Image 1 (tube, rainbow, N blue to C red):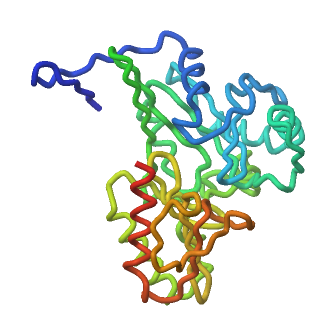
Image 2 (image 1 turned 90 degrees about the vertical axis):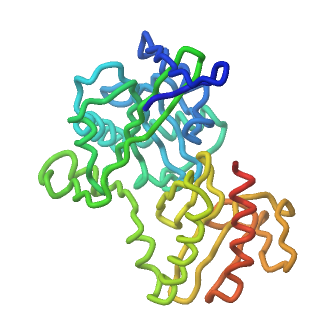
Length: 304
């Protein structure tokens, strides 16, 4: 992807300034992990089992650990290395819990962590065609991010997406460490979310989904165990979950920051709930569709 700058009304391509060391990438990412990936750093250079993980991080949205590895070369298998790390983590859960508690001063039990959403992120200046092709599975808990640095200190970070028609990794991995890991870890999809709803609620959800995605071309959809999250700039602005007779919608803003003139949203700032934010509403029809979408738009714009 070409990056340009403007000089005297002329568009000039920026020259790439490669990172000299893998450690340079690691320092930059760890110092800005919340901004780049909306994750918390737990430990840099974390030793678990026989391996040393570059960055152990935590996803507060899914309540799960994320392993981050940085690479300068293309001579490694993302599948083999990724699943080896995942298997090691699942065999040493207690070590991760202890490290988390020491870092954040919080008491955490193993069963409060969602181990099923543990994942691995590889960050590199470039990946081979083979590596990119190898992630084309719909249920792969491994993500590839390409990071680049340019001459005017511009940084880009882009994720490679698997094809929507991808097959399951378990179809080619019977009897391997992959099968073992996949028995505990699950990558959630839209099908997992829709199975909780009726045909009527699925249709209502699809109406909201389409209208939300039409708000802009910078929206990312993320499926979790409990809800669908719609993100802008790495942060959820609306979450939706389905049931047989209703949808529950959360807006990820502090209470009293949105203009809810009809007062139809509920303040859940002091109660436990699945989605993000203080605004919650339960809907079973499209009666207030346009009005609810107007508040979703407010939340979207506040995440700009």
